[in-house]
Image (cartoon, rainbow, N blue to C red; front, side, top):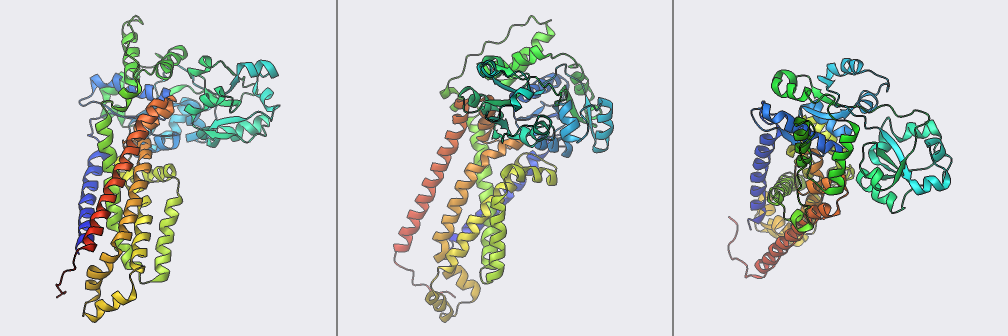
Length: 519
């Protein structure tokens, strides 16, 4: 039976495709502007604003890497050269990136960033600070006006974004300054508004330009002990950008001071409350600014669930998701099966290798992606493929070892009695008998990869996760489902394919045995 060898040859082909695809997409052409964004509404909009502002002055269209995750990931993407620029905030740069003082001037920040090849420029004109907010009715009922007032009510439940909880300028310092004793619940920023409106929590962290503050009737509590610094929006960029793309950089500099708080809140509201696409919001703002504020906003119809599910990006996202899954599982087969065969006779080595693979499964996916971005100096397909491959190794290796261990000793001895060499015994006896168990491991790895591949969108690798990430940022349930349902359909399809393969294998085993003997 040659099916195991066909599996390995297919894995070699998938490995070649992975290398070609990853290297082709890792770095765009030198004349391309690469813009990044974090994973919240305002950052998505600002990334589109930067790209559209620079587009008339570049030889090729700018590449926008949307929703790259929290500060750590998007900053690492900038530092590694995977992106050229993104919109950041002075308080975040001073405290989270430089680990310094919130009073640092822009000149001091530039002096600290210069050795890393980075700089700060182009203040956009608005401050988007951190604050805590509660329901206005509760604030009136129990007398909440300041953060000091909130600290006097330890019975109130706090739901804070995971990034805020872990930031240097976030929860730990805030709790120490005000004496908070609550243990906050970690929430996605986009979901926190729904949770506070449903009275599942009592207070949330907000950005002061969030559109839902007034929409949901929340009260922003005064920072009476002046803990939070200013978070003025600026551009954090690579120092080679003005030299490499001088016309595009000149266009970006023209954005200085052109966006005030009211304009930013209005743009956020169009995205979160009216479901207007980010690129349309940016286009309308630039048109309005160019016409003295008189340009009309485009009236795009609100998309329903069917339009979101079968949108024009469906085929592109399906192709990206399929490539991520097929290539990562294929490479995992190529690595995992031979390695499992190699360590199978050695009990201690086998336990060590399987133990290391088990440890890899426990590493949080976002943490692994952040480490890979730092090591590889790239975002997109390459780190995503490596992460998915590592997660696929354990079920494939474990099932290969289990399948080999289940082969009866009598059949092993029969091969030896027939004069088979160890490689012949492996190829003609052990692997064919272990194949059903091995295939079950590949089936499990594929299911894991389909689900985990949605995380690849956090580093610009595409797939159905793009819709899920954007839906989280906007708290758009329909968009979340439009990403989750195709992923679920792909998982069901893969289960059907594996079921068909197993049925064919069962039929083949029931067929009359061949009378040919090994040479």
